[in-house]
Length: 488
Image (cartoon, rainbow, N blue to C red):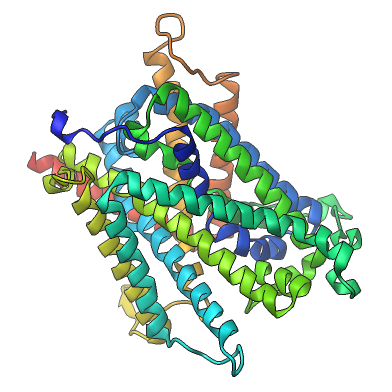
């Protein structure tokens, strides 16, 4: 690699951990308790879903840390898959990640930011909180503007973007700790029984008939929980920019995932101590965090919840715009994307053009979903198949964007973890000494891969449209790669 095109190592352990935590904690912990409670009405099973995904994430982190140290290149999973399986695997990951996963995550997070900002404006309005202040297109404009502004900030300098990430991550971790402590504060000061925590609200804890458990629905709930944990691999795209990577990458991954598990379990326990699972499942027009804060703090609670969500998704959005362009940068270096995307800004030493391309596509996705939200478009008949581009009735833009991101994300991220088997054959412990090795190999990575394979298989029954769309998009990417290969 040309030294002038080498990204500088400016990220330390604390900042790297903040990237892991900050890009993961976004909207999931505030919103996904409702679909989980809908699919799994028993408190014990619902918490087990959060524990199970957290446990699997720990296993994946233990394996990926070794792979990230070995590869240690910009591009994250793209570089890992390319080096493990070949250029075709790297290209397919880049294809799905750019067009759907990363851009969809950015669009979804910015959408929630705009909605939370609008909720704050409504709460501050003197003539009533139910009066609309921003129109549909006003909220769309806010969504697009926040993406554009953060893209420019991260194009301005990696250190600047990472510094913002550290500050915002600290604030949102503190806000989640506050939510976890609110029931105990309410127990001491609340005057009404509804505002006090009670273990009675945790019933039913376990199914009365285990034979009647809908395990397919439980698998669907796991997909929602995976969204809340999604992004834990985001240390890999900036591995080339981490100081002392042999030490800091494994520590940042394990520390970050450990923090996530503790926060998620604490917050979900707090929710259920104040709101029965049946009521959480029935929430439609308010997040579970908003309902929770309303019951404890009244109208001030809604303002607190909206502010916490806005800060949280802002941090996750900034993290995604920090690490996401590294994919296009790496693909441009390999000739699998336009070469111009691999150029660093001459002053700021960032992949500025890749940053702007990713932000531009994410903004376009926001605008398209905004149009489809309020408009009806004609359906198209292709033989016996009817193509309907309209959004499902009553479905929020956030859910529309996120529902189709997880199949491709889980598929390729599982392949990235499985690459440890490939690298162990190339770099056996008997001949190559590395500063970090995954413990209990091959058991731990095998458990992760088999468990994720089961979740993906279950999606074909519980979320067939999302799974089939993901498969179709991957096949389109394979066709594009074949065309590119023939031209080389």
